[in-house]
Image (cartoon, rainbow, N blue to C red; front, side):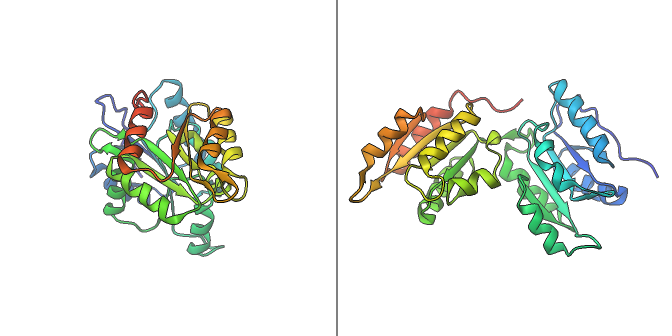
Length: 275
């Protein structure tokens, strides 16, 4: 059977890589992606995918999106998600699955959601699902300009929801988590542009968590938020402690929507989008 057309992509067309051992499935997915104005490249094996990703990275020509089937031949690709993301330059990694003979689709989807993948798709999916992913990830779909990604960590679901709504309306991509442990476990911080984190939190705690993020990912901007803890510590004291630990900025609660957006814009003003 003829292989999918391989795009060298010298015209600046954004390109997606499909890692899928079924040629028929790869052709279907390719047509969906091409309908978005993108080009596609298909790799039927993990080895070939690594070769392509490595070559692209060494030449500074990273792909714009990676579509990875959970089961590629005899291999469970979930074990490769973290490593593959080191080659993608921040491009979204989308896992796809219809399950397998040895486990249900729901079981596979559950395992997939525990990885560092950006999205998980149940097969068969529709072109609208691809469009939604591209809309979520890229500011200008036709040019595949990545949206800056902000991570919000706060134990208060209402506060997380409000911040997400404000920042998404301002054009940012937002991920939110109830605590630092959950954020670090489920999200690859290397792909964040900025982290908003409450100082006083359960588990690892905001101060220790923010310090870990800054030490491990120094390029990520970190903003400490706090109103303190009634009867025990003031908001100003909590934020002062974060400042002493080298956190980039402080945002006292409660804050106005304009205060939030203006601080974010100032902090990300010099952050360039991925080439």
